[in-house]
Image 1 (cartoon, rainbow over the protein chains, first blue to last red):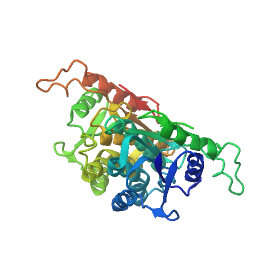
Image 2 (cartoon, one colour):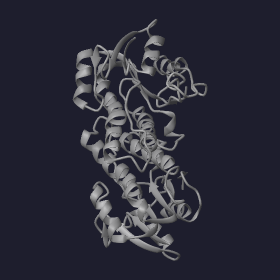
Image 3 (cartoon, each protein chain N blue to C red):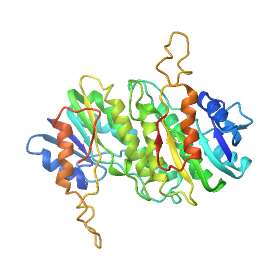
Length: 196
Length: 196
């Protein structure tokens, strides 16, 4: 399959590309580093990305920023950025992208553990992650031509926790997380939230 | 308790006011009809509402608009309105309002059944309802001075279905739905999503 991976240079995206490369043609997209670039917060940038790439079988998003900060520190701008980027950026990948996806293709978006299991500092992230899952469940009922859509909800990733002074042992290896994206792409689920 | 009810003139709001009036002092707020008015989509309007009302024990929101329409018809403006009104309007009730809520008080927001159980036409509504629930779970961990927060997720309401040509029998009586708001206000749950 020809598969767009948005966020292809991030921790999860790199692992997804690595897992898919043997069997699929990957179109790598990222905000700043990949050959094709997209600013998820900019609707026109998303539309241009699809024009540049043309027809594909699937779109995987392992991208999107949301602000992690305590409720008392979160500003209007923090909420606006989080909604525009990780939430509406991914929603627009679907809204603008489904005409570029072939019959029976798929979208896989990224939510995250904090959507259902919050932590202090997660109000904006939890809001966005839960919203992505709500959108995915609903959009699955309406996408045309057998196109499927799922979300992957990653837990803490071992490789992300390997900063100095942090204990990486509670983290899931990113290669395990990547398998949830593979399952969404190659399986037949739709409207699902996949927990690696 | 002194309780703000936002959306006090709506179908649910009226039932909540009726259920609470015997035991509590109600401050009725609505977009257009109550003595005190608020435009949830306007942050300054929310701030002015709290200045006008002063200290309270609790805030109940049975308000907020989100656009019900098929994915292919939902416009950028529909998503923006839904995010600004039912989602950020209720988030801002909490962000701007908690200094006006006394120790041990509470917020009760409204999400809705479509957040977890979508229907064709619900992508924007499902997104917003799920987001409200994600925010509530997270904000519960951070609100100061023992202030609690819950969401009520109403199902279809019998009284709303009583339009000509519709079958009201699958709907839940609004007086039953109102009891979930009473439970949130008078109970000790926090971070919960209450299903009437």
